Length: 485
Image (cartoon, rainbow, N blue to C red):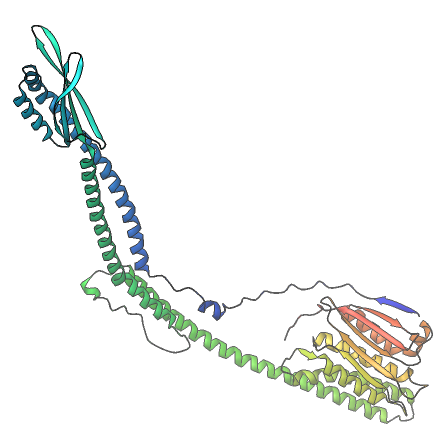
């Protein structure tokens, strides 16, 4: 098996793909969460701040009230020491029980005092002689006052006055005060929050909702004079505010958008008309080009008819007409297609190869055609060279592959699955060629045209295998040309 690579040109850099912006999916819009009421958000915000401030106020009130209660107890103890203790010393010294009891009853009537007792010193021991109130078992503050009396220049120890102040009552008053402050602040917070909610709804939220519905209902495709109106009190009766500025801005924007859309619509209509006219002109150019090529083939056929016995002239006319038909068929497919720049390669190459076999068919030689072509589209810049290559190679097989046999098979393949390169091949199962010199001798002008097209237009490479039939493999970059039509 002998084969040879002939490589031409350099690979072109693949052009960068241009990213296209995509519109937001309608499903994503439908899945958006429902908006939260702005007034409610402000309501909860104010409530949260109010609760925080209430907790701080209650804490401060608790501390302040408790301190006042402690100061009140201290002041009661000070008053007992200053006002009640001197007469008690005197009454205890003179054993005046009635006066002593009166003084103790006066002490127990003081605020927060729930128990008093007098312990007298007798024989070195302290004995409780008088007590008023229930013996304290709860927490509180107990204060001890020494009972002393100066007699004949000597300070005598009479005993101890025990006074107990109950803190439960004080704590109850502190708790009552805290509850009152908390309740009043809570009512104030919720009242203020409610009024803020109401004011926000009436002055802001309902206008924002109306504005949102107006913006959602804007349809530039319909001509309308509708403007945004919030049904607020007359502006003559009040000074305009920010909401009025927003309304004016939206109405102004709506007007500008409507005018811009009208201009764009007019421009689009002009562009559509121009594009339709351009497509019509391009189709007309393709059609005229195809007709002109048919006229050329007719001229060549008429000219060849003048020398029917000259085989070289007949061969020249036949080869030229075949190549012109390959180019003519491209233009015919283009003006028949919706896309004026791309050709469906399966249809084009199959029709072209069948036409070539019909023109080159010899007596008793009817080869089969087999196609292995992807469902792909090529630009005219690539499709036309491929068509000429297939025409030359199929014609070459018809002339040289089946001269010693009655039938055979010609395979035409096009593989464009590789993102970088495209492979085009034409093979037959004919007698083949025995040496490289035979390739150029039998191929002649046809293979030279193939090499030239691959080198100059496709910038690719050719591999030819000649031992078992004839195989021509062509590989070229996919990104040679860009769309212009």
